[in-house]
Length: 276
Image (tube, rainbow, N blue to C red; front, side, top):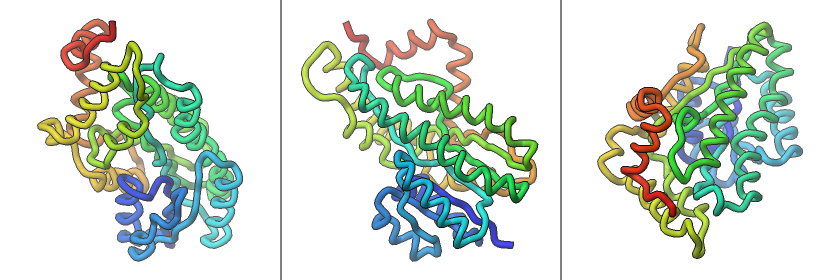
């Protein structure tokens, strides 16, 4: 029986790579994005495409209803939609932070709530949440983004236990550095203007760009690497609760554990100017 999967954030990067890979493996793929016109290539690759805004209740409800009506079931949900709001915390507009949490956290939770009834009826299903190594450590200037990914860690841990008795498995994927244009999104959302954090924010933006263009990129990987792990999470009989992707993820997580709080702060001092 062909299995059906709903994937968010498919306009580019990890979402697009995952949709294309699963379609090629015979899945009934619903690739979604806020702007469905960005999904033409995925439609050509055999995906069904659908408008879905994870910050809009009506959009989410309609999308899930459409999938259930047309495909008759939902076997997998890949919560991929997300972005980074970077900048020193004092310099951020709280409204911008709320928007990030609406996408990265509340949208993920609400869409999961909407697909769970179908999975419970089937007594089977997989929820795959795309987290980040940033859910286990924090870089200066990324506090808001990291907070959202820490939240995804907690939601995934709780949900994994709560739905296991219904035959539903929850898997968290923690990518490291992935070459998806993440740095461009960071630059676009960085606070501008003068103030005590102007130099610091500029350095955070430059450091992020350097991570994707400089020697560190060899420790990362393409979005297709994440797509391969998502397919494993959806298909293995007994998937792990967590999967890291690329060498950078486990290496950075291990460094954070070993260094402790003060040691990590010292390591960050070597990379980021301290606002003062």
